[in-house]
Length: 150
Image (cartoon, rainbow, N blue to C red; front, side, top):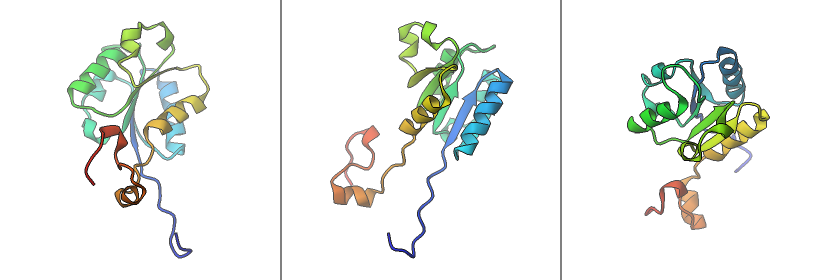
């Protein structure tokens, strides 16, 4: 990069946060916005289903919520063609059966240090390299989706 070029800003990612605990949801939203993410915070899982899932890059769901639990919400989001990572953040994630835990991209406990959540989010929302750069380096621009012709 020449000295005349400004560094390119990181892409803005949109995160859906669903939790019926208003205080935790508010704190999490503020923290993620401070990290540069756009956050749609929803305290009712049924209301979360009213959003266009194509606008999100990742979701963070609580498990124990009225109306729908986190697993039921995950299933409905997937039925609505949500292909983004869905992270379970719950006070009871370790108590859930393995077959339910396996449906989530990651399962975290609310009591864990916040850097664990942030690192988990970053691991899923790594910027995709420029396809031209990938050709030069012999790498695929979209490794999560298999090999593509560039």
